[in-house]
Image (cartoon, rainbow, N blue to C red; front, side, top):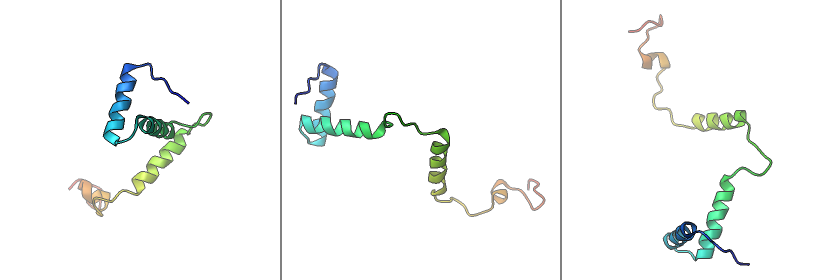
Length: 84
């Protein structure tokens, strides 16, 4: 099956990707389209804001803690929650 690229810009980009990836033009085009398709949401599905936020919260929870001091100590508050 043939694919005709009628855009000089698209053809140039495809050739550049193929060269950099050491792939044929066909391989580079197929791989690029597969990667793009994987990043696009599936047709008819949407991710709710709460689901996206939960994903961000999960990622944040996995981050290393820079300091194990209590937040009040980091901010400079004493036991009475007054600035030191």
